Figure 1 (tube, rainbow over the protein chains, first blue to last red):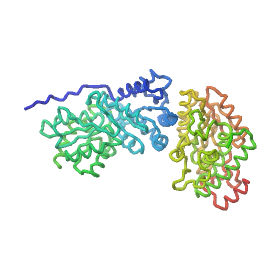
Figure 2 (cartoon, helix red, strand yellow):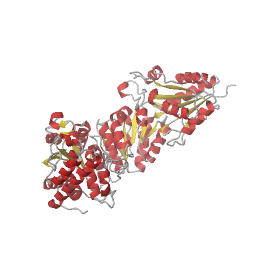
Figure 3 (tube, chains in turn red, brown):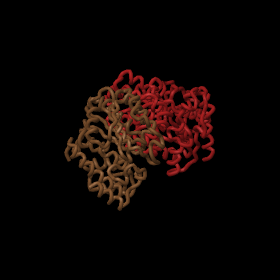
Figure 4 (cartoon, rainbow over the protein chains, first blue to last red):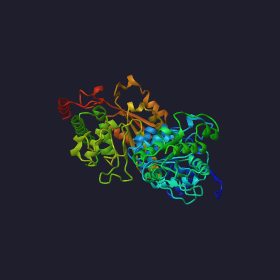
Length: 325
Length: 273
């Protein structure tokens, strides 16, 4: 008996655009909110904020290290600055400044990376950010967040603003399918387990994902369900701090975990989840992500397929990990 | 401790701070005496004469800000903070010891009155810009004073910040280059010359003043000129002597990053009497 309808996800705006919208809302509510950009405001969507609050928009030119440290100076004087650039530039070019000017003195700067992962497509690997989560998570005091859709992105911008301390918010270039429902609560250190129509207990395997791969995980869940494999999906949008309880529960109840992310597998969410699993309820795990390589130019869909980041890849990993139980 | 514009009094304070620097670095057994001693008059003129600050209210929003971008000269800043009562003077000789608030490089976690944690070179001018922008946004009178090293000026970020400061007319910001001409590996001119340094700052649209960085009247006049200068930040190229005040340390690259021995400390203190 087939009662379930086929999973259909409505397309939303890109998480970077949702960030730009939420930043304007924040700016209206709090006059201390300041935005910084390094000549990419039309791509990071800080131009929404710049248009409404030109006096609170700091154009730093193409000088990301300077931008991060200027943001740290603003924060240390009581401002609530959001510094935005492509993830690869904000994190890599600003890393030393993130370390000494922001993380070490625990300064209240919010860093927003857009164009993360390989789904930026045609621009190619120099603009692709596949190391950012590993780098940001390596900084003590930093909170690292990765929204899956516009609903999560807006909520996490507000959560970042309310949090006292440095935050890295990772957003993407392409439009993102809407996986969450309006009003869902997103908290730093939290996660979201999908208990919708596709969920049938999640006894066989848990798929933990973040960013664009949450939608792929839900599609994989449907495929697996049709094969009689019961999978649960968790959106682990708070990569640091991690929702340890959710991971422990997943390991205990499903006994097999797949972590899927648009990031290097070597330094992404997967290894952080694995650390919790090995410390608590060891179980078989599989990792879907970018292997030890740089990608290339192509359409986003072509790249996600070539580098193994689709629902099909996640479903295959789920079958493998289930077989290892 | 009270503020003063009296040059003789400021010189006496400078001499006292030089003694404290030599003592604390000797007790620590490591540290950077040369670049601490070269910056004494700059720090004394700022903390005792120029800057608006209040030790009883260290986070007064309208205070002026001091950032030691060349964080390895921490001892000179620690002496000023201790003299003013921001931190205990009795603990100066715990410099660099486990648990001391006087960390090897300035660390806000241990001294909340510090405006910045520094030590990784090249970053303080950008922090100063952020602080200056915040003051402008809030229409506060605060000014920011950032002390840069000459060797530090080889860092690219200094010039990113210089370009920003000039272009955005951050006129409540002053950069002071402690141009003592020696860095860790030797003489700046041998390693990577900064010349023409004043021309560089002028080219980046900074109001630029060259002076003798040990002349308190010259520093007083320059800081006053900086405050009068609108529409441009000010760069003060302070020509100084590394290890100033101790004959055997002066212009001696060895004392960039080596502590004096007990015997050297005694000789130094005798000279600074």
